[in-house]
Structures are given as structure tokens and as C-alpha cells.
Image (cartoon, rainbow, N blue to C red):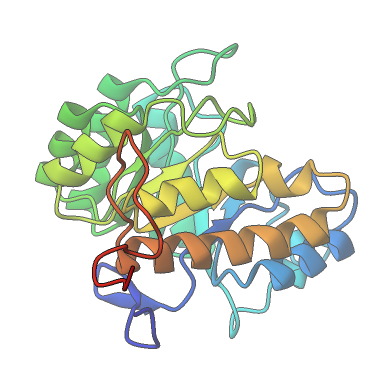
Length: 259
């Protein structure tokens, strides 16, 4: 049974919520803050290259109290290992965090990761003491290599970023779960609550999303739905589903009935 002891553990740090959320694409900072609160998330991603680090001006960071949220700076928009490494160093120097979501994109149209550049950046950042959570393709071999480098988790995509297509390749996600020992967090492609529940029912340790909430007609209501879906999916996974069968099995067994 899921309880207070069922924590998400990343590099020795414990979190009660298994839902991580982003901060982009909202109509206002106020709406963003309300949606994040409704999501129940404790880890919030922030695109370093898109945030105003000059605290003399209004910034989304003003709406994210650090006693409530753990910031996860990300390298969104980086297309080379060098650029991603520089961005992570900037985030640490700005006092944001040394736990980072590492993205190195390979194509502007699909936003698929460049795994070769990703592996290079991960090696450098791990050596420099960063806690690295890499966004990667749903490739079990790449995920194993990232774990071997020392990444604290792996974050395979469910579908292309912002597509809302849901988990397109659950078989690969299952293999990744068998391949690595670090947490597996589905990142990208979640469109609605059922997508989040499916990821958790597969056994994933968490889900990260942004567009699925921020792009909804009512982001605050969708944030609450995602919160419930992640919790329900985790509980269903722990409970253990019944086996699938081709034919019916009576809900009320006939054995022992008196004719």
C-alpha cells in the first residue's frame, strides 16, 4: 500500500510527490503558481536560458518559494554538450541548484535528444559534482550508459516534447525499468491524466510534464487531475493488477453453490 514511506528518492533526497512540473507556457506567473500548487509537485523545472536572473525585476522565481519547492534548472534550448555544460554552471553560480535536468537537443523540428552530445555533457557534469537527470530517448542502452556515467536518474521521453501523444512505446519503458537501477522518470509527451497513470502503472518512479498542464483549457484543473493520476497509477502499480485473460472469469465463483 502507498503510504508516507513510499518516497521518490533521487541521489539520497526524498520527495513525497512523484509528479514534476515545468514553468513555461502559462498565461501569467499567477496562473503558473496556482497550477503548480494544485499539482502537488515538489520539484519544479526552470529553463535557465529563459528565466530572468536579475532579481531586481519580476521573475518567475518570485513565485516559487524555495521552502516549498526544489528547483530543477534545465538546459532547454541547448544543442551541444558545451552549451548545456555552460548553462548548468550558470545555474549553479546563480544559486539555483546543482541538481539539473540535462537536455541536449539534436533537431529543432522533433526536439529529439542528441544522445551522443548528451553522454558527453553528462560525463563532464557528473565529474563536476552535479546531480544529473538526463532527458533521453527511450533507448535502454543509452539509459544504461547514463547510469554507468553516474546520473542520478534517467528521463526517457514518452513521446516528442509537447506532442501530447502519451506513452508511444511502453515496451521500451518496461525494458528500461529492467535495465537500470536508478529512478526512471517519463519526460515529455504526456497529454492527459490517463497518460500519467499509464506511466506510473508501468512502474515508472515519476513523471515530468509541462505542456500537458500549461496548454490545457484549464491548467489549474488539469494540474489537479495529473496529481491524482500519478498517485492513482503508483497505487495501482503497488497493488498489482490482475492478469489479462482471453476469456471471462466469473466474479462470483460457482463452486460450492447448492443446486
